[in-house]
Amino acid sequence: MIVTVFGNPDLEKDNLPVKILPELKKIFPQVSFAHLDPYEFDLPPSDPWIIIDTVQGLKKVALLKPNQINSATNRTTLHDFDLTWQLKLIQKVKKNTAIHIIGIPMGYDKDTALKETASILSTLL
Image (cartoon, rainbow, N blue to C red; front, side, top):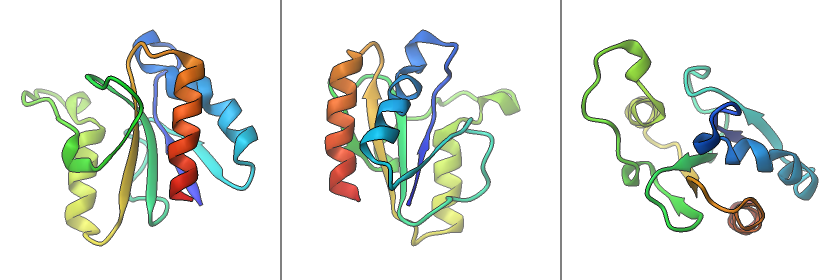
């Protein structure tokens, strides 16, 4: 099982998934975690594909489906093609791939994020 973790370690509002990654590795030693940039992959690494990422607008850690993630409507450069766009593309190309997103709110407490993320992840494994 591979769990993909997104997040920019240098950007405070987007680095919580990366901050809790070392502890998740200890809690789930049987899982392979891959910290990637949204532009570093072509196809899902596994089916089901489990993603941990920061999601703006959440009140607590939540299990989401790709259609629950809003994307920016204005795209002007290739840099604007984010994870949401990639997910839509994958759903068209590999229609039967199950995608589960564990969304972590921006600015959330690290310990609470770890506990809630681990709880949701354990239900998916």
